[in-house]
Length: 332
Ligand SMILES: [Zn+2]
Image (cartoon, rainbow, N blue to C red; front, side, top):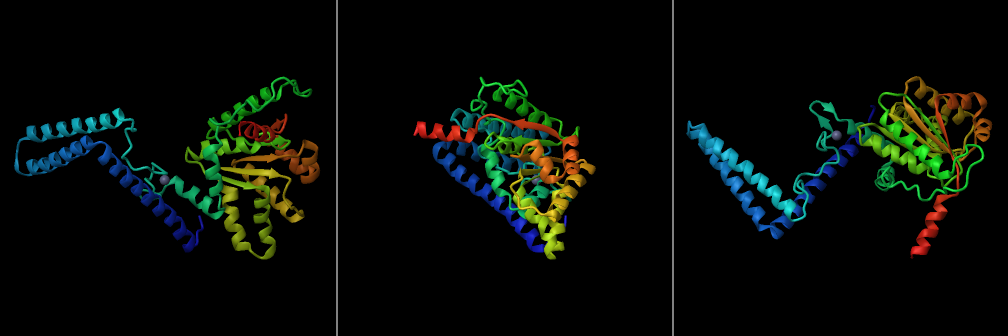
């Protein structure tokens, strides 16, 4: 991971920010609990006093019975504290630190090693993809709705309704996540816009980010922008950016076909796709193009390679974004 010092410092500031945000939140919550549940503070005070007695007893007494008794008392007091929180509608861990990454407690390190989250933090930073992190809060498998898909009109090619089709695609996406570490697979989402292609790629991104994988999400426009940089003597920047494009666990290329491409960037794209196949790194490509359009634009050879190593999923039906908008107007 080749990071410049200013990049490293910027990423460490993000970690510092997470830690202080967590501390600030706990302070606010502690005040709230002290105000609403004075009993809780009293229990806490007893635990502190016991701990002090425990320390003195351990130092000056030979009896282990006394220390065991104090330890038992403190365990009971802790249980009472938790019970008190729950009885008053608070979660049991309400006063525990809230970490973005539990594994390293937002330090970026596990012992001497960098935590898995650090690699993702680098990817997020280098490609400024924090917007995706925000989006996937709302767009994930739990919030995906089948209701927008028509269940009466049958597609002549597949003999499926749009809803049956999207259910099949949804299941394929979940299986892709489930088998991610054991089975090498790639997905090609194609079909008209407004049918949930980007949404489903966000669902997958969220699941994999949650299980310590690095995910890089780029629109074709952003990707070609990076690929084009090498043309203008920005080799160093190009290879630094490319490292993650080639290396991340999952690369999502959204909206392929909307980019400004030339022979050079197209050959770079071909290189990227091929390199990831060789290294068994998964890629999801989504495009509004049909099969023939893809072949025409990216060349038969590139395209047949994609088709043979990707699970191609065709999205069809009516634009659900229009339906969502209409719904909002009706409910307003
Ligand atoms: Zn971590």
